[in-house]
Each structure stands twice: as C-alpha cells, then as structure tokens.
Length: 275
Ligand SMILES: NC(=O)c1ccc[n+]([C@@H]2O[C@H](COP(=O)([O-])OP(=O)(O)OC[C@H]3O[C@@H](n4cnc5c(N)ncnc54)[C@H](O)[C@@H]3O)[C@@H](O)[C@H]2O)c1
Ligand SMILES: [Zn+2]
Image (cartoon, rainbow, N blue to C red):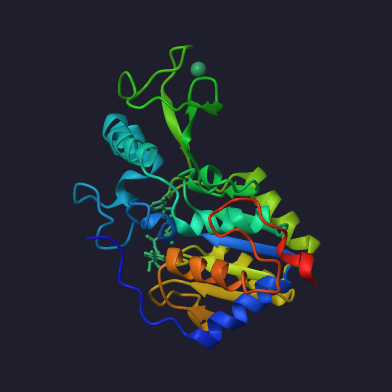
C-alpha cells in the first residue's frame, strides 16, 4: 500500500522555500512518522499504521506493559526487526546533506527509529526516546541494546531485572534532558526556517515549539501530503511526500552559480560559499 500519492507541488511556494533555505543559517526540523514512511516504516495513524489490528495507544502505555510485558515487547520486537532492515530515504539524506553543506540543522524527531542518524545527521533529539535503548526496571538504568531478536521476551538485564523499551509511552512524561535541549535551542533564537515534516502534530508541545520558532522570526514550512492541525498556522505548506519535496529543495539549491553541490551525495562546496 505505501504512502499517499503526492498531490501537485506548488512551484512558487517551493521556490520561496528554496530561497529561504539558501539564505538560512539555522534550520529547525520537527519530524514525525511520515518522514520514515517512504523507508517502509508504517505511521501510527495512517491506514497502514496498525499492528495486528491493535491500537498503539493501547499497547504503548505503562499499564499495558505491567499487564502484559510480553505482548508489548512483541510489538517492539516487530518494529525493531523492521527498522533494522530499512534504509534512510531521500528526505533523511537531504537533511543530512544540508548539514554537510554548512547549515546548522537541528532535528527534533518524534520517531524512535535512527534513520536521521544513519543518513548522517548529527544534531538529532529524540523527544520520544529510541527503539534501540532499553531501561532496566530494577536498576532504573538506560542503555543501548541492539539485539534483534531478543533472546527472550521480555528480555532481562544482566542483573536479572526486566528490561523495557526506553521510549516515551502515552501515559508518561517527556524526557527532561531532551526538553531542555529544545528549549535552549529555541531560546537562543536566530532560527531562519522551521520545517514540520510528516507529523499530524497531535501533541501540543510539537505545535508549541513550531510556533515558538515562528514567533521568533522563522519561516514555518509544513511538509505533508495531507492537512494537519498546524496547517493553518504555517507560512508555507508544501503538499507532498517528504522524499519528493526535500529532493526538490536539494536540487533547487544546486542552481548554477550558487556553488553547485554534488547531488550524488559527495562533499560539494558549501551552499553559502557563493554569497
Ligand atoms: N518511525 C517511527 O519511529 C514511528 C513510526 C510510527 C509512529 N511513531 C510515533 O507516532 C507518534 C506521533 O505521531 P506522528 O505525528 O509522528 O505520526 P502520525 O502517524 O500521527 O502521522 C503521520 C503523518 O505523516 C504524514 N505522512 C504520511 N506519509 C508521508 C510522507 N511520505 N511524507 C511526509 N508526510 C507523510 C501523514 O499525512 C500524517 O500527517 C509519535 O509518538 C511517534 O513516536 C514513530
Ligand atoms: Zn539491571
């Protein structure tokens, strides 16, 4: 089934975004499940986004884990296997490329996958945790664990404690360190462009951070094939798939005379060099 087909992209709006990105120094990117959809990771709420016809909101809670840790782990195991075998797509690569071209690209993702990092992005904050980390409930200690599959479900720590996925569930608070990083970043100001990509913006804090960037002067750009709860507040809406749109932005930045980057992904001169 895959992701929805891209509606026609508005060329004028796209040109405005390309110009803004070309001039930008600081770029904030808020991403959600939709940016990983073209890699083959299902979104939560899309038509492909169901797992064994269960609602993730029933599985991704502390209560669900207490009641049936094995079932919750089966769901995470399924997603760990999937995420381990998929690859970053054109959108992840374009964002990493922008950073390699000298832009200060700060990514705040709701995704628990590591596709931004695997594409090469270096400033990535996971506001909902990482599927590759676990927390020992006995020691209250979080550490990386990339075993796929786990030897047993639920997996156990060396100390004998039960391990849980180190992700933020629906009945839990956001991690303080990740919140502090985004709040500090926003307080510094100077954000030129803020992208909101592949997220329905269900959570108030995502909308709040996007609007804080906009209120401090950033151009707020939504990238999504569908309308979202933030659409009406965006300065520019680019309707389409993230991979298509970021490829178009990347190609647009390579216009002759503006320090043509190597579109095959090699290290080209910085975009800003020609100015
Ligand atoms: N990859 C992952 O790690 C992953 C996967 C599924 C869900 N989640 C979780 O989902 C929750 C938040 O929901 P959300 O808003 O991120 O996802 P969501 O499922 O609510 O919404 C997905 C959004 O992506 C859009 N979309 C679909 N295909 C797209 C494409 N090719 N390009 C751009 N946009 C596309 C949809 O129109 C929709 O607005 C978070 O808790 C997040 O951790 C994460
Ligand atoms: Zn332990």
